[in-house]
Image 1 (cartoon, rainbow, N blue to C red):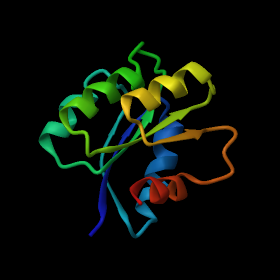
Image 2 (image 1 turned 120 degrees about the horizontal axis):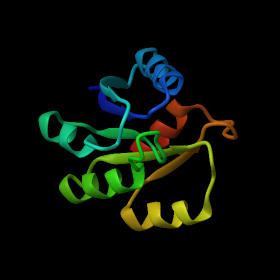
Image 3 (image 1 turned 180 degrees about the horizontal axis):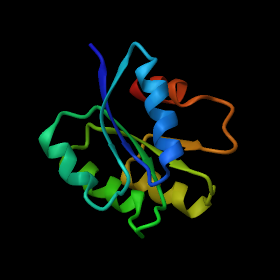
Length: 122
């Protein structure tokens, strides 16, 4: 069984990179790849999603932490990895309060996204 994944990131390059990792993995299947967190919570109503890769700040002023909070209220079993290029301590505290399982820093992480996903799903 493959875990179903949704990517929420406003950067095309990031979405394509995540998609490539997922397509080349044996454990994950990409269901949605969207460029805004604004309506991310509505996507989980149409499809069973196991894990979400969620950017925190997006160009359209949508916020991944707000979207994650809504998603966790609707389906708390969905695992969320918050992704950011700007490590901000207050976000980590807020993410933990919301129930976000993992963090991944675009520029700084030595682990690839699949190993973070594997750890999050365990």
